[in-house]
Image (cartoon, rainbow, N blue to C red):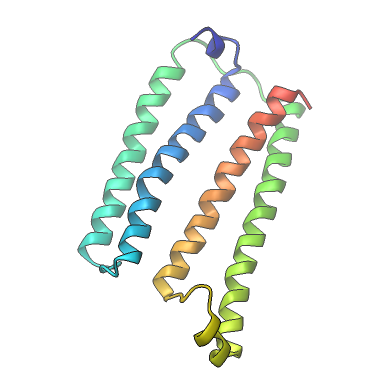
Length: 158
């Protein structure tokens, strides 16, 4: 607990964001991949239940972690260093997001341009719902990477 007392309020916010992201990712994505692998219906009741449970868990975790970490002091003023760390983290995260989206788009284009090759040697046979989930996974990864990189820059001090 003493370790958290040495963190600034911004670092505590980033740690809480990262913890919520990890919990939500561990809740949502394994269940979604199991649903896709078992060919259960990805739309309708099962998907609505998964999304509803994920949203409720995110709200609950956010409140609990926020209350736990933010009982001590007021936030500091934002300075140039904070803006710099945010910009660096965003740049890296959006690079990762761009690469992930480019891979998904590239896969779609190859499958459409070369259907006979795609049928025989496709790494992934993607339905529209699977593509949507891959794009959601891309957003999730970029969010986690942005938070991790900001924490890294705060710890390193540059």
